[in-house]
Amino acid sequence: QVQLVESGGGLVQAGGSLRLSCAASGNIISINAMGWYRQAPGKQRELVASITSGDSTNYADSVKGRFTISRDNAKNTVYLQMNSLKPEDTVAYYCRAHTLNVAGSSWVSWGQGTQVTVSS
Image (cartoon, rainbow, N blue to C red; front, side):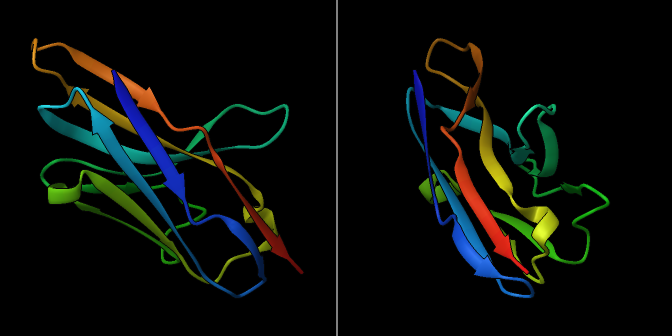
């Protein structure tokens, strides 16, 4: 089993910055892709940014140039630096990790979510 613990959400004024962190622990041999998603009430969860084990990144068009995803493999942690935040970024953010366990099985795990609120 894999646990993902997120932190860093909160309230910020428009134009401000926040940094989200997500630490993975448990039955992990290696971590492939990690990513951040967000979901507004009544809407589908959507990709914000992802990063592979080779540090290839992918971003939603709405956050390109404002958000930066990075990872620390030694700490099994992924970060999302969010700059120039807008009120429309207000939503719950979820961490996702694609891991390989000691038995050679592949798992996809989700964090519990962290709320980001941007005031205008």
